[in-house]
Amino acid sequence: MVTIPWWFVRYGFPALALAVATAVVVLARPALQGGGDVTRPAPAASKQQPKARTRSAKATVYSVRSGDTLASIAGKFGTTVDRLAELNPGVDPTALRVGQPLRVN
Image 1 (cartoon, helix red, strand yellow):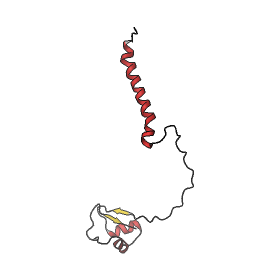
Image 2 (cartoon, rainbow, N blue to C red):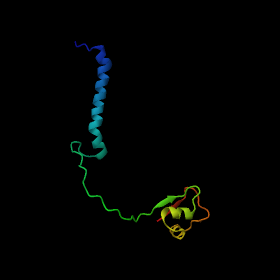
Image 3 (cartoon, rainbow, N blue to C red):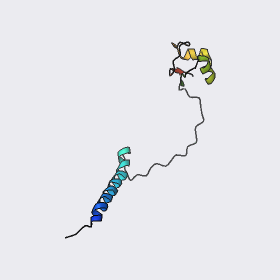
């Protein structure tokens, strides 16, 4: 009959269980996240040249802050009040609300 020392039962089994659980998580996590082969190395970072900055066609939206007016917002973005009014039809320039989204370009 094999006798297992009390200290191994007290400390060894929990440590062994923790080591096995950690190994399972470390090995299974990439497969669960990527759904792929865990033996495949990670792709190398590409060394592409940075793209030249071009003006984005995406609209910029500004959230109105306390004390803002169309004139102050126009000044911040280098545009005019008329352009802001054109970009935001239906917005009452005398009744701006804090948090109201305004298109600025």
